[in-house]
Length: 562
Image (cartoon, rainbow, N blue to C red; front, side, top):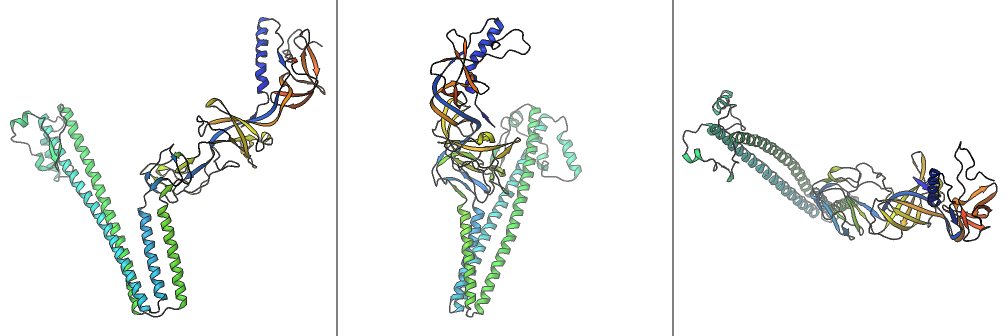
């Protein structure tokens, strides 16, 4: 929200006088009259408001079609040049689509060649050849997909077998510890009896041969447990040695962990089998469809005849449609790589490798007279928006900014906005850099206001004319816009000026030190000073007007005399 600064200067000048008055009021002594002087200098009026620093230029980047992030080649804060690769998404599905469209293009070209040829038999022969090539390509693709799925299923099955072996070894270890330590909750014999009573053995119960109690064992196995270990597919597992309660707990935990691993491996095997069946069925449909195309081409070849001119035009239209589809598919593949459109600094990245980003879609409100965004404004996105990492919606995937130059987007109240115009001088101060006084210029002010908290505000864009390494995007700053200014004029502090009727007066210090009310002709009235057109001369000492007497006080206070 904007605020004027008309009294900031004279208030600072009067603080000392007020402090003296307060001190003498406590001591009962008459305060010395505070003095000011008539001098020369600028008389300025300003309006002020707070805003947020943003980069002078900023671009939100994303992928036209979403996907899984495969590579992010830059970090936040990196400087990039035009054309530099920034990130990639997985392009497998889009490349498959491109191959399909290229196959359709080949088919359309073959049909046009057939229609344009004088010998239809020759043309249909070429079409048949193309159809057979497509069929072989589809068969090859289906075979590769099936082989890949079979390999995945085989690996899942091997993983399951491995986890089952681990589970059996874990059961063996548990019973070994129970027999050696003596399980107080349930003896191995009781557990084997319970298992036999159930009449079945599950994968997550100990195998029968491993549950048989040992009858003999070498003395070194009975006396030394440090070498207790077992192998699973050539991998040695050596449990940590501990007291019996801890060994029992550890062994039981190992069994539970192995059970969960078996369940997970079974689920993975089911998923692999399901995917294999699904892709196999889809491949069969694709092959049958292409075989039908081959059959149709064979029928056309057998019934060859010259095509009419109208048929040729139809084939040309289909070819143009296929060419357009290939160009679109190729563009989709190209767009899986994100390039820097301009030089800049990476200000924001919303996504990590492996996460999914959505389709880039949406618009960003920009500041008046600029291409930079309005701070703290939500993107006006349509469905999806510029999705962030992990499927989060709304924000752009990456933001590039020019951090060498900043601008300030400031909302002014309508009364102050009416006094602001382009090219006015501005002094910008930043909360985070107290000693900075940055010169700036009003670039533009919005012609349309925005309601905020019951008032109408107008955004003004203010451009800093000098850079500073301490400035950061998003810092809070105060802009003092000079709306009126006259330089090198005779002036008096506005704190010393008062009006009596039609006259403008100040109190000039007389020869005896007493105030002499002196009228003068005033010119421009600024925040801190008032211009003197006549009636005063440079160097005269002025006295602040006496403070009004407190309500209800007795006696004549300052200003009580004639």
